[in-house]
Every structure is written in structure tokens, then in C-alpha cells.
Length: 402
Image (cartoon, rainbow, N blue to C red):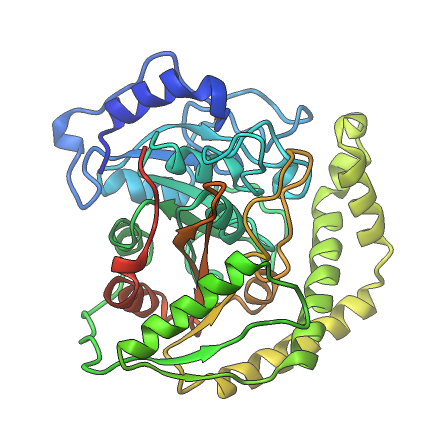
């Protein structure tokens, strides 16, 4: 992986155009060689600016927050340091990891959005500034920017990466994940943040796959439809069995539950700020989201969570014999303009269920914008999902060059 000293130098030299970094030190404090032991020895690490790094400020993309440096690392940063990684700076996030985008531009085409809310982390990896960077996902904040920037994005099973030291937006949704340039790099991070016991033998067979086109909740453009079709065709050529269940009503219900859950939890989490003297520093979009969330009665929230639990049990049974699901990552390539982070319609269901999700970049459009596919697995099948991708998708990935 790219050494932290080179990563820092590249970031300082290139970021005037990309604006992926919310904070970079004037000089990099590079640890002694004795501290750089482990699978990520010396690797430069970007950290989304909702996650604490000792000595660096955590601003959450908002002027309402303090510029004082954090005193301690977040738990996940501590784990990665112990494995030899070196945090080089804080990457741009949408305001409080919600909707109002930061200044980051898409390295593939600067007039197009990099996605969000983990915009800076995805862009820093896509621009070749770092090989790995931490992000978070509440709705589509990992998979969508990975899709738009053309990098590998991984959102683990909910709750498996400890959130101490993270500014949590939605308690039952927020998940820490990471971006990388290759699946093998993502596996290296997973070996640190998702440690497992005895290695499981890889299945000596082709995968069992479910295809969810999700046509009733979002329309795919031609390039993304082709990416999905090509992925399925390659898997079938490799011997995979593919089923296509129809789950239209469930998908609609899960999307509704996600929207209401996110608003209710976001509102209660940000209520102290919304009622403080700093409330005027919040964007109108965020203030409106807080208002809408506070209007949701607790009884309605509780009812939705019961429906969520029921659907989660049903879906675990429905996909119990499937190795992974192939589904869209985004409706199309990154949209033009920087005022929006794009649609997360194909990501929210998996955030609500808490299942691990992986974006694989597989092609580019005539404009040079990346497209790809999303693979999803049952909870706690994170290593298996990455393993299937390493064996069945590696040669078809397209991450560009920088």
C-alpha cells in the first residue's frame, strides 16, 4: 500500500483541485519503524471528519463544531494504528454526514459530484492520494461515493466496527466502513477491524447468487444496467446459479422505514445543537430534517422498528441459501453538479437491515465516469463476501489509474 509519507506528499500537492481533505498537517508525524508492524505497516490512512484522530480536529463538516483537536483516537483508528497504518489527515464529509455536500470534486470529472456523505474519503482514494480511507454509512454514504468515484467501498455488518470516537448521526443505522483501490486492500483492513477466529475454508464450488434489480424503487440508466447484466453474465460463465426473487412490496416498505428511522434518530441526536445558540450555523436542509424528525411520534417510530425486525427475520430466511446478492449501487454514474450528493435509493435497504455491502467498480462510460455493482451478504458474512469478490470479480474490476 502507498506509504504514509508519499500519501501525505501527494495529498498536499494535488488537493487544491480535488478538495478531498478537511484537514492536513503541515508536517507528517511519521512513527518510528518499531511502531509500524502489522498488515498495514506504514500505509497512509484517510479518516472521515466525523471520526476522531488524536491531535486532529473533528468538525463533521459544520462550522458549529469546535476546531480543538481530539485528545484520543476513535476505537477503529486505534485498531488500524496497531496494525501499522498512519492517519495522514481528515477527509471532507457532508454536514453531519447528512445531505449538504462539502467542497469535494469528483477526481474522474471535476464538474460531477463525488457522492456523499463520505465524499472526501472516496475522492482521496480515487485520486491516488491514499490507498485506504475510512467512511461511514447511514443511507448510502459509503456505497454511493464509491460508485461515483470508481473505487472499492465496503460497509460491514452493522455494529461490528466499534463507534467509540465517532460522531453518531443515527444510532441504529450508522456504520463505519472503508474505501480502497482493490478488494485485497479491503480484505487487509477487514482483517484488522473485523478480526475472526479460525479461518474458514473457502467453498469448493461456484457461488449461489440472488439478483435484485430493484426496478420498482429506482430506474437504472443504460450504463448501470449494462454493468449489472455483465456482472451476472460473468458469474454465470464461472458456474454461478442465479435466482431473481420478486420483492417489490418489501422493498417499498423497507425504504419507508429507513426514511422515517433516519429522520427520527437524526432529529433527536441533533436536537441539542438545534436548540443552542449555534443553531443558525446549521444548513436549512439540516434544520428542516430535524424538524421533520421531531414531528414523528415515538409510537410511530416503535411501530416501524417492529416492522423492521419482522422484515429482517423474513429476509434472512429468504436469502439463507444465497452466498451473496447482486444489486445496483446507484441509478447511474455521478450526476453533474456539486449541489447534491446524488441518489442513495439502492443503498438504504441494506443500511436498514445492517447487512454487509460491497461496491465493485467494473466499467466507465464514454465520459470517463465509473459505474459498477453492489454485492450484499447476510450479517456476519463480511469476510465471505470479500472472499467471493476476490475470487470472482477481481479480473473484471476497473479502478482507473492515477
